[in-house]
Length: 149
Image (cartoon, rainbow, N blue to C red):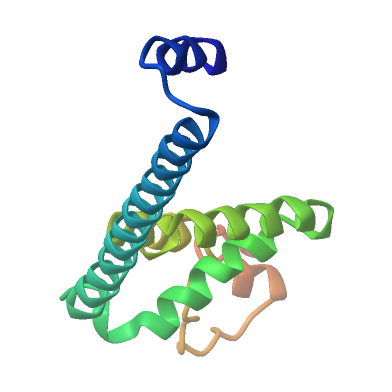
């Protein structure tokens, strides 16, 4: 690029000072443009993250129980065990860096996975009193009994 622009400057009979002024102007303009684009992109990204957070808080399915949802998702990470601690740390870092961890679809799918893979609820036992008889009859009420005779 330097070779091309030097040729143009010579063709235009520009002095070293004039050529340097054009190079400086071009560099300044590129820097300002890059900064403006970067700020616009950053502002857009931050606005998107805020919109996602607002959307998930208003979600009728999980919006009112975000603490519980976060705890269930956290339990998924814990279930991977200490041998995967670095993987979990790297994954969380990627979610924070990209903003994907604020995306409602991401949160909902991980919540559904946590519900399916999480611990089940306790099973209620019977309140019926065991029938008198042997332990085998108490454990197996349909077990035929021997008649003495």
